[in-house]
Image (cartoon, rainbow, N blue to C red):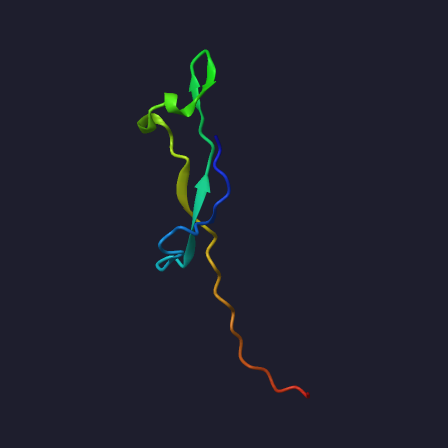
Length: 77
């Protein structure tokens, strides 16, 4: 099935990737066990080693640096 959106991974040991400045996230998808010519069967009928992954890491959009401009003249209070 298709992967869901990349969301912040609250279980990650590091929420922040220092080298890229991006937040680490996680994607989920639903995987079900099916038997040819029969259809869906209970998950315990499938070997864990042959089952595709249901969770994978991803990177959330990187934060952008602020644009800093020179100070302007003081204004009246």
